[in-house]
Amino acid sequence: MNLNTPLVRSISLAVLSIVLAVVSITAQQTPAPAERGRGGRGGGRGGPAVVSPEVWADGRITFRLAAPQAQAVRLTASDIPGLGQTGVLTKGEGGVWSVTIGPLAPGAYRYNFNVDGVATIDPRSPFISESNANVWSLVYIPGADFMDTKNVPHGAVAAVNYYSTPLGAWRRMHVYMPPGYEVNNDKYPVFYLLHGAGDNDEAWTSVGRAGFILDNLIAAKKAKPMIVVMPAGHTSRAQAIGGGRGFLSPTDDFAKDFTTDLMPYIEKHYRVFTDRAHTAMAGLSMGGSQTLNIAIPRLDRFAYIGVYSSGLIGEFPGAAGPGGRGAAAAPTAPAPATPEPSGPSWETRNQAVLDNAGLKKGLKLLWFSTGKDDGLITTTRATVDLLKKHGFNPIFEESTGAHTWINWRNYLNVFAPQLF
Image (cartoon, rainbow, N blue to C red):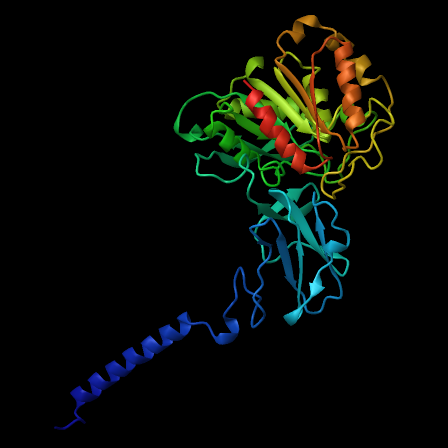
């Protein structure tokens, strides 16, 4: 047989082309050995595989960071007690630094690495939590039934931008919509939930686990479905707390923004009831003071008021303890320092509302909770006493713990079932 005919040569060239194409495709799909291990858990091109954070079944956490050239690496973490020297990472094989801490109680914890004096998030973890002027990595230890991610219907959280007329700037808030909101035409009660000093509107949904807490309460029929609005309590990155009487100032920028634009925006764009009986407001630390400064003077609009680890900050000079954070100092949500009072006191300015017996009749809940080791516990007690003096019936539940998210998540879990 003659294999050198034009037909045979054409067939041979076609087969060779197919073989080369297959080889090329296979080569594109198979990474070179030096590139294997890249991606979310890898250690980079040819580097060691790094998993961080790693949560163990007993509640311990191992943090790792690949930094071969670093001289010192420390762990900076929110609400983790007694880090001290246990937060120092040790350099191991391949330049991977690591430390194991705990066991810790179930919950969400913010953390960062400090590498030779420079703060950085964990490059091996996609989970973050924002604050007003910073960003943190976030790790969650499961085991707390009320805030775990469970197989129940889940609501949705939206980041919403709106224009603030008093501030002349675009602002952002987070809004939780309960399961089923998008498929029905029902109206819902509304709960305005404020963060503390140093944080922002994202904090309650990340480290605060607010969406999961509400999902679980609603699924268990312990709380009514509701819209939860989480505003940005700071009006600038400088974290200014207002002039004169700070959070209680009659010219407070946040209060003007809240009443002029934020609250009307929610009532226009979401299916919420706008009457007093279906409106609640609560806040932690700075947000607790802002809640009192907004809700009490407008008591005809709010039937439920909650104050977490706070009170009338600035009304009682010297009431806050040293540092304001109690026994568990953390970098992300410091209890605000008591501002120097100037002008009429908050009590004097709001005398008429405080003594209005008719307005008290529609107030269904005035609830306080602060940890016994919290630096603001004396401010809380003084605020409760002031309100009792004017005929209110506040509930004060003194808890264990200090000025931390460990308490604030628990407070939300206790407060929300009492609404509406």
